[in-house]
Every structure is written in C-alpha cells, then in structure tokens.
Length: 292
Image (cartoon, rainbow, N blue to C red; front, side, top):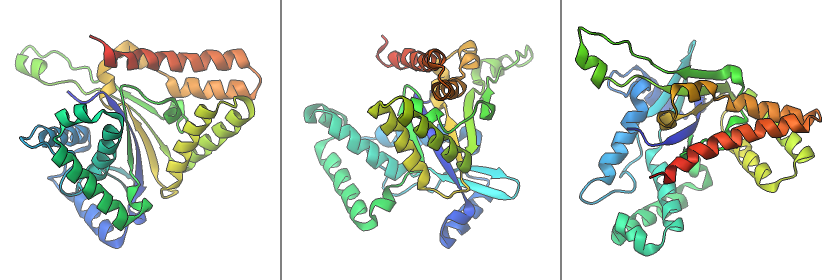
C-alpha cells in the first residue's frame, strides 16, 4: 500500500544538469535495471520502509539516491531526481521540530536522531542554500489548493485501470492490483504564467495573507528551475482514498481556475462556490487521517 500522499514534481531537461550528471542520467535512462515509471513510486516507498524498519532505524539514507523519475518528449529527456537523502533530512527536521522530544525518541533513538541532524548540518554548511533545492514536494492526506494553480483541466490525466475478469486465470484477477493514477503535467512556462496571473487576482480581490503566501511559495519554488522544465502533480497514494466516481468528478484544477476567473470578472458568487467545492472536497479527504 502506497503512503497517502501527493507529489508536486519538476522535471528538468537533461541540458540543465552538469556535464557529469548529464552523462549519468543519459546512461540511467537507457538502463534496463532502473525502476520503470509505472512502479517508481512503489520502489521509492519500499526503499524508505526497509530503512525505517531496520533494527536501527535510519531516518535518512547514508548516501544520496541514484534514481530519478524520467519523462521523454520527442528527443528531449526530462529528469526529476528522487533526492531521497535530502528529502528525508528535511522531513526529519520538520518531524523533530513538531514532535515532543520524549515521543520523538520512541520513533528514533536520540543518538541516531542527533547523528542525522549533525550530518544534515554538515551538508548545509558545505553546499549552501542551493543544495537544499528539491525537485519533489510531498503532501500527506491531501493536495494543497495552491498546487492546482499551475495546471489547466486539459492537462489532467486519469487512469482507473479497470481489470477485466479472466475466468481462465483466476489468480491474476485477485493478486494483480489495477493501476490507478491521476496526474496533471504542464510546461514550466505555462505553470509560471498561471501562478503569476493567480497572484495578481489574489492581491487585487482577496487580500488574505495566508492564501497569497502559499501561492507565492509555489511560484518562488518554480523559479528555481530551468525555464524549459515540466511540472507534474501526482495524486500518488491518495487515489486509494477515492473511488472511481470521486476521481472522475474531481475537477479541482478547473474549479480553482473558475474561482479565480470569477473573482477577476466580478462574479463573486461563482468564485465562492467554485472555491468552496475544492476546499470541502479536500477537507473531507484530509479528515480520513484521523478516521478510526
């Protein structure tokens, strides 16, 4: 079972990497041993589970991951490195900062936690702020509303993966999980344009600081990458919290875009109704985190 989390990813073109990294990722793309795109999230999750369930749990890998998510459009290869070590460090720092010490020690022994923190501090001192740039953002139990801003409804890709029953192979029908996925993919240029437009509308009509800050944060993050990158929103394990009808009806990106357009054109009732649909949908899903 995948974690109930969604992912916002940036895939940079191969040309955006150093010469050494370009050679590595080009060879990686041709490798038969790398995790295939359809199973990459499962492989990434399994790697983390093995690390955390060890006799001495490891909050972060000993070295940086050599894997990546890949996309190829015509002759251009796009790469989104997993950065498992950096993302684990950042997540563990947030965990320690938001968890009482006695409770945190029950998850990870204090000596290991302190060693992990020391390793992260040395990494930050040697690499600077640029070294903390991650290609992947993670959100547990829901998709943050600002994550829909960079996308258009036409860029939505839904796979329900219904599997036909096969009476001659009953075991296949019961042991093979059908593929389920909901993705949005767009160009960096489109993503930045939509975020910029949203910020203009929010500043002009909303004035709510928290909403403005959250969208600005997404915009600043996107500015850190190559202008010819791709941006992807992946519902990840959240699709297992939603049945087929719910996934088919989920038009969050379109509804949020309609809300922004309504604000900009003076249709306040429409804007409120569309925004509330998005908010209530994800509140109901996020509430499952504390369900019995």
